[in-house]
Amino acid sequence: MEKEDNSTVKSLRAPQDTFEKLKAIAADNQLGSQGEALTALIRLWEVNKAKVAVPDRATEIETFRSYLNKIEDAYIHSLEINVAAEDRIREHFAGRLEADNTLINSLQEAKKNLMEQEKVLKDAVEEYKLQLVEQENDLRAVSDSKKSMEADFVMRLQEKDQQLADKETLIATLTKKSSADEQRIKELEDELLAGDDYQKKIAELTAQLNDANAKIAILQSNCEHLQKTSELNIQAARLEAQQEAQEKIAKLQDSIAERFSKLERF
Image 1 (cartoon, rainbow, N blue to C red):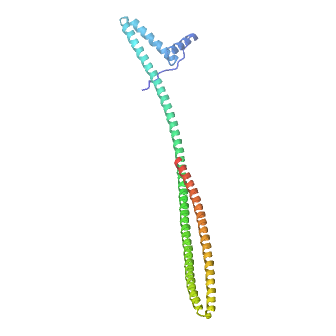
Image 2: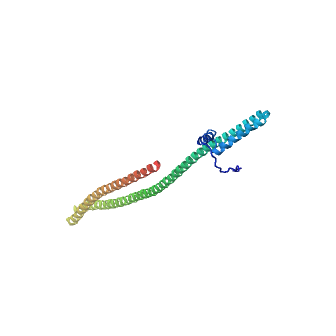
Image 3: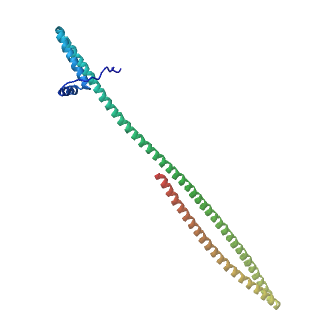
């Protein structure tokens, strides 16, 4: 509750040193103004006057005045303590509030940076996953191509084997025919001993036999050459295809290993 202000402005004629002393009294006693200093002096005068008027109660008056002074001093001291405490508390909480605001701003900035880094990492992981899928598809395509090439090689080899088997069958047939012709020649020679009419037939059969033997030799040579050439070509093609497939697989494996290494570092 605010104290009612009953002060009135009045002019007071007094020497200058009186005003200086009044000002000094106000400053020494921590009074707000010269008016308060004047009021305090008047109250002191009233107390002294009361002690003179009632000398028997002078001690009580002085004791009461002492209590009032102590109460006033205690009140002023408590106000000073409260003001100082309020200032300290205000400064403390202002410092804490500023520190908390700084910490909050720092945490928010760190959170923002972490979210941005997380987004970058997620995008990188997704990109690596897509690249890994592409690499796996390429590896699967190479593996399928290798299987297809191997199947084609096997088929071609089987065809060559069948051709060789056919040649061998033909050779066996011609050889069998040659044996039959030789047997026939022997029979004709036996018949030749019985007459010269068989000489012409023997010559014809001999020519046929020689022609058959020549064909057999040519077929055998062609068969051997074809077999060697086929085996060499098939082996070379197979080695070349296997080497190419292995190189592609090695490159893909190195690329996949590199991607996995990058993912593990993230």
